[in-house]
Every structure is written in structure tokens, then in C-alpha cells.
Image 1 (cartoon, one colour):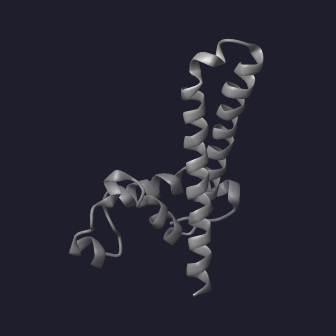
Image 2 (image 1 turned 90 degrees about the vertical axis):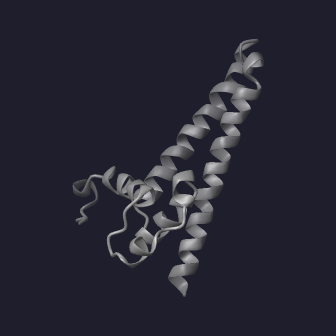
Length: 121
């Protein structure tokens, strides 16, 4: 039960980070005309939110690379292609196929196994 709770808390953190990334990018888009008006506006309304979005994006990628498979499956549900219900063959199969598992595999492969000292199969 504790693992499920930990996964839920971790996924919630990732979801909030994605929400803040989208908010920062929306701020830059909303104030795009004002960004060009002065150096202070360019910094406070353009560079600062864009840098924050980039930093949070890096944190999200790093946390998903270190996440257990159950957490990656929970986060991958956010993808529009992953919102489809799995077929009975996919549910019963130990090796799932489809867009959700492709997304999870892409995240896992992005981390070099030698850098972390872990072996992935």
C-alpha cells in the first residue's frame, strides 16, 4: 500500500511541474508584445519564465528516468494516444505494446545505464 501512495505522490509532483511549465510558457506567449518593450520586461516576462520552464522540464525528465515502471505508466496516461483503453491482448500480455509503452520505453532509454550504475533489460 505504501508503494501505491508513494507513486501517487510522485505522479502528482510531476503533474504539478508540467502544469507550471505550461503556465510559464503561457506567460511568455501572453506578454510577447510587452517583452520587446524594455530590458526589464524582457527579463521578467520572457527570460525568467522561459528559464523556469526549461529547468522544470529538465527535472521532469530526470524524475521520469528514475521512476519505477508503474509511475511512468500513470504519467503516460496523459498522452492523447495513451487514453485509449487497452485491448484484452495488451492487458494479458506481459510485454505491452502501443503508444503508452513506447513513451515509457523512450523515457527509459534516454537514461544511459552506465551513468547510473544500473542495468536495464
